[in-house]
Length: 352
Image (cartoon, rainbow, N blue to C red; front, side, top):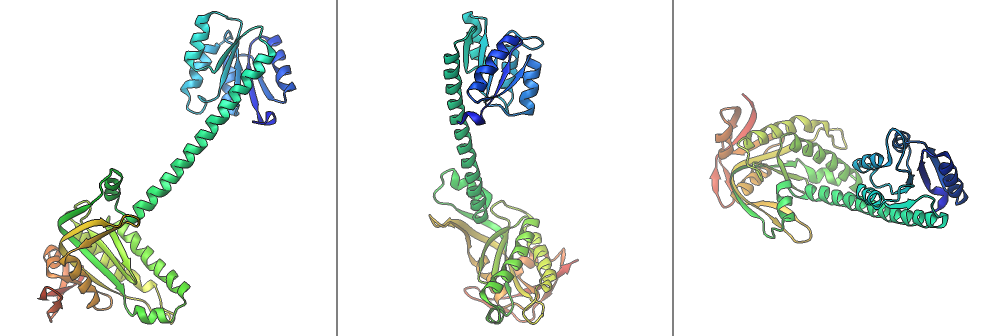
């Protein structure tokens, strides 16, 4: 540590001792601040940063023992090294100062060479502690970044289970609601936009959907091209999962017209919803992915792919959960769903 950058606080009620200490310190290019008692010492420490403190024990108002105790109780001041310089040479005093947190103890009259050596030793320790503190802060910052990144990929309860050491995470949920939303005529849209503008547009749309997911406390699963997949009711079960998904879907229909194609025409989405059981789990060892499987997922995807622009198509399972609170229009023709045959579907219109 460069002496020009070292600031030392001297606290001693004896003028001759203060003068001697300042002369020695300034000769070594240290910056000094002198106070006459413990009260002034504490005030100076709260108003200015010091690298080391040289302090007498027997001072008026607040003695050196009391100042030490207050320093070590203060989170912001406890790591400043303190060298006690006192005429009290009893071993009990030395022990008490060390127990209170003093770095060193010199008896007056002190040896200037020994004092300089003790100061340099304290400064080296402080420099090491400062470097260690900075390193730990850096580790905390990087850990926070990693935590944030992990939570952007996985639900918080799932991330916590992984951190606890679970290697295989696979759960069954008896009833959730899955929604797929995809942009109408996306292929045509993509052919007329540069890659940059296309990505910017998708980012704006999906960011809007992310905000709705947060608002309704749902779980975004993934995006696939222009399709967005979200689920309600997991990984933490929620009895209102269907309502939350329905409200998000209605908001999407209301908000999509703010986004326009290259000709200024409003964009629209097809939305499909299905309620039922799913299996959920984490796949991958380097690039984690939390995904869902089952007929409920397949049906929700099918509801979107064969849906209509600006319409929310649901299966009968979702209709049964919501028909008392929302208005639906039943689709006249049954829909063919791979692996499940034909089924009745409904368009979600609005709350009752």
